[in-house]
Length: 209
Image (cartoon, rainbow, N blue to C red):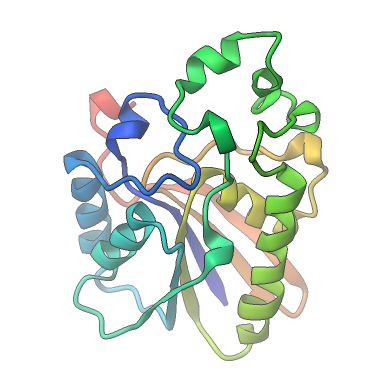
C-alpha cells in the first residue's frame, strides 16, 4: 500500500510568514492553483480513501486534489495542525530570530522547543498522529492500494516521525514540505518505507522556489 501525505495549499498567512496552527485560514489564489494543478496531474492515479484535517485550508485542498473522483473525504480531528496557542497569528521569522524565545529552537533544535501558553508540544502532536496511523491507516495495509492524507506542515512531520521512529531531535528530517507537496510512503508486511519526502505534482515557478 502507498500513502500520499499532502500539505495543504498556500494561504495568505503562509505568504505573510504567520503561524497558523488551529486558526482556520482559507486557501489564497495561489493555494487554489497549486491544489488544482496537483489534482489534474494526479487525475489518473487511483486512491481508495482520502483523509483530511477538518481545517478549511486542508479540506479544500483535499477537495481540489480529489477532483471528479467519487470518494468521500474523511475528516479526522487528529490531523489538525499543531496548536501554537497565543503565538498564532505572529510572524514566525521574528520568533525564530529571538534567541530568548523557546520558539527559536522550533526547527533547528526541536528537542528544546517549549509550547507557548495554551499551545501543544511536539510530543503531544506525535501521539495523536501515531494514534491516527495505528487505528485508521495500518489496518488498511492489505485492503487498499493507495491512500491520500491532506494535513499540515508540523502534523505531517508527526506522522513521519511515527513512520520513521525518529527521535525528537530529528523531527524535521527532510525539511518542511512545500505547500501541496506530498511525502510518499509505502506500507507492507515488512513495515513502512519513505519513498519521497516532498514530491511535487505541479510546476515550481520562480517565486515559489
